[in-house]
Amino acid sequence: NPEARFLLYKHGIVKTRAWDQGRKLWLARGSFNAYPRCILLQATSLRLAFACLAGAFLASCATKPTAKRDAAKLHRMSVRTTAYCVHERGGGGRRNAVGEYLSHREVRSAASDWSRFPLGTRFKIVDTAEEYVIDDYGTALVGTNTIDLYQPTRLEMKRWGVRQVDIDILQWGSDEQSIKVLTPRAKHRTPRRMLIALASKKKSSQLATRDL
Image (cartoon, rainbow, N blue to C red; front, side):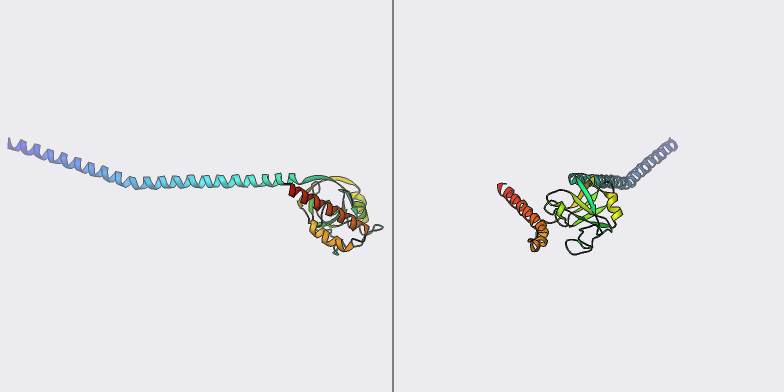
């Protein structure tokens, strides 16, 4: 039947066209979705990279204070401390051993045997968080590890008295600067004793270095 054949032929064309259109639509969707998929992968990679960087940064921040605390512990020591003021009998006046005014400000003056704690040594008292610098010396301190803390009044000097305290060494002073200041005063007993101790200390250090 010609009419039946025509209908079958038409039906086949429609099915073929529908199949072609569906295939094209599927291919279009695939090509369209491929681009966002790449972007998503890149975005995910970037997020992971940022997360790793943030983690490393936070870890380094957490490690630094620990390292600082550990370094401070290495320089912590227990020392005997006394106190002095400009008004006590036999005091050296308002100026320290390098000719500057004794300080009781943010960084305070302190005296020591410069062969034990050299000129310029900075330290902090653990209990009070007060910071001091060695800029003075005293006869009674030579040959000891005692540190004499400057106090502005006699009352504060007596209030401090004698205390055994823990200190953190913030910065060691200079033996060379100590020798430079003391050498012109070598005719006096106290500077001379410290110079002898500093020379012995330097010689011991040189011998130790040579042995290495």
